[in-house]
Image: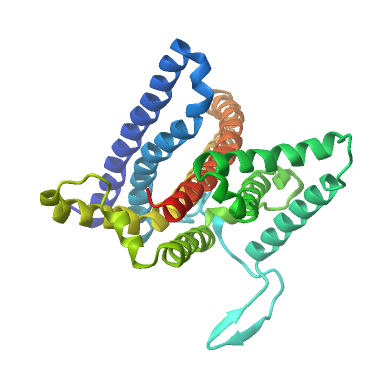
Length: 75
Length: 261
């Protein structure tokens, strides 16, 4: 395979990681909302943890984006 | 790859260019006043005006003062709930960090492109976010070693770890500790870069499809433009969330140094 083509295919494959991170972020917010509706009084106190979970899940998607960018523009 | 004929290059917006020609040389590097520096100064100016307008200390606060006070209360609450009363001395640092990132993110979103000017997102460069992350990380290291001395290394062994597990847990904890400045800086930089690239790619769709004819413009350009409006709103949300996450993670790391779990 041509090296240029392989790079582009790799960058496209990295998009799978971004999609997986979407599942993760959705899971974080979905679970939060689910339990927040069960106990709305406790929800406000957990907002910090919500965003920690969001940041951790999102980071991996962003890493996939970095991999794609490196493959297209740098490698 | 980038900048082919007739293509709109989504990465061009991140180009750092000198505003004035010339500049002076230090050790083989040309030092120039770049657009990045200009937008950092603009961020500083906007922040300055915002803070000055709200620091009049009136007994009955006006709208502006309420705005500024709600921001500082927000940071105060974040630090006291994450670090405890000891965290109060970090309020100035975390507050400036939060406000700088927030203002830089939002100024980079300004739609002044319609006037022919080019907004530049300062936080879309790892050079800047990396420095912010390194400063946060150094504060953690300095405070940790200052307060606890070599006892700070017990951070790598969570409380109640069985003796057998320590050789396995400690390296993992060490790596997760050392990765913090990278993940902190990378997150902000990539989140801003990704959003702006996405907006420019969609903008390229609108321009190219409209140039190709009215039919294509209606079929591709109009949905892209609608999507751009939605994504711009999402980007504003991301700008706020990323500033919040940066400040939140900084306060959590400070908590590690201050209280040593």
